Length: 231
Image (cartoon, rainbow, N blue to C red):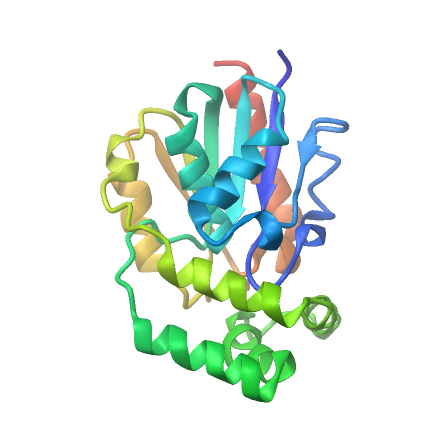
């Protein structure tokens, strides 16, 4: 069967964050919005998999979407031919107090204050203001209950410390040069731990690579698609 691309978005955004990537494989790219898929990242992964038909999947995830991509690979390793993890940390140490404070801030002060507190600072200092403003507008379209669920899913995700070390297939680890969550050092270590890992550091870029530097990401994805389809 043909290769399919499965794109999994970051908080607090939706599937439209992949607008500049959808034409890389025309008619073979799937980008769901995840918030209503369940209360755990494993449920998100299972529902996302149900939307695919190919036995040759390239799964691309950003932030919590990267964590979801890892769960997709765990659930259906035989169907995954490559992973692209953007600003993703496989290991996780729960911080219940931070999760509770984020949920409280969302409930009491609203999405816009949460955006300014948690997500706007993840953009690079050089980010185009129009891009940041469009992302804020997208975040403000979320239902508060959906965004709260996303925060809970992010903070309750399982730790997959050894996943990359045991993953036998290609994985591209992508990070913005100015990403602080989880950052270049963490992503470099992740890529080094993988048997077939490659690290890509995007200059003048923060956490949301698909938004800040879509052309650079598209070049990486085009290479991943070519190599995976022509092993």
